[in-house]
Length: 61
Image 1 (cartoon, rainbow, N blue to C red):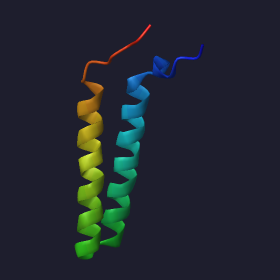
Image 2: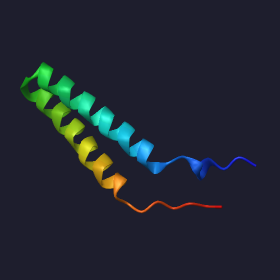
Image 3: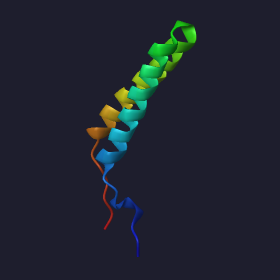
């Protein structure tokens, strides 16, 4: 039986950090109030992805 919990949590965190970095760069390019909002959204993803990397993972066997 396939276990959906076998995926490494670090890969999910790295993807979240990558999305945050992309959104931050887009927000910086747009500028203005909308760009500031997009930049904040991206930075929040970077912070949450970094915190997720240090959270203990739960593995089911």
